[in-house]
Image (tube, rainbow, N blue to C red; front, side):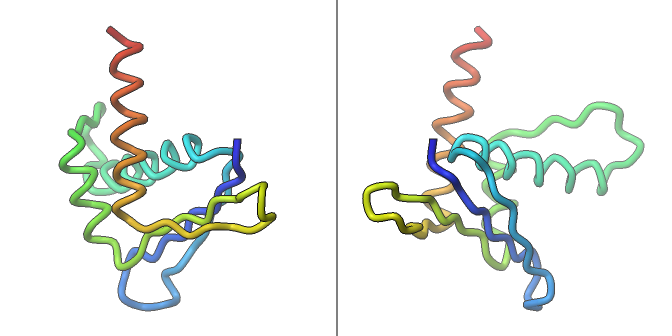
Length: 103
């Protein structure tokens, strides 16, 4: 488990920047999914059940002004930066594992 910091900038203005921290990369990827789910709930307040596929989630990630992670590297006692493409790959692996467990 590596401490992970998620940096999010939804809009073009720097004032929209936020960050969240997580105990692991997987927790962080689940956090990205939750951000998207909250976005969908705000856009569809009267819909009791929200569903989406991974391509819609990736489109959301791509339209964010900035999304990146800093992952703690124990060997060097530093944080390594990762971009949107890395985040999407980690989300894909996470969701594929979750789908495999639910079958």
